[in-house]
Amino acid sequence: MPEERLERVGVLDNEIQAGLVDAILVDRGVPHIMQTYHDSAYDGIFQTQKGWGVILAPLAFREQILTVLEEIKRQSQA
Image (cartoon, rainbow, N blue to C red; front, side, top):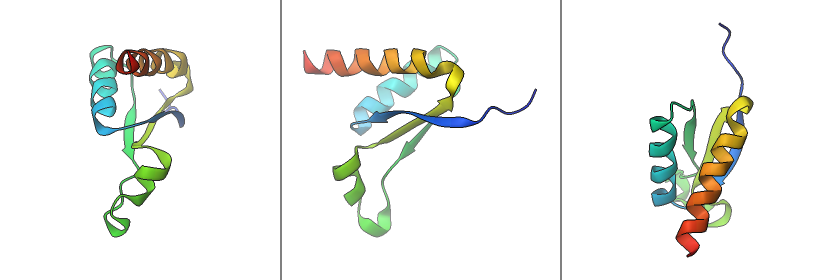
């Protein structure tokens, strides 16, 4: 089975959101990588401009991941 290309699926706002999304995706068996924008050389300056980081995953899981991310964002605003 060939490896699928990972694409940028969504932007994470903070570390707590990243942890929640990661836990849900792991529980559902969704392949993904959480990539932070933190860079120790710049002391995390990109995180204040771009968000905490991104979710990388095969495009086949895009809709499932975006649904999870939107639900967590909606709940945090309530």
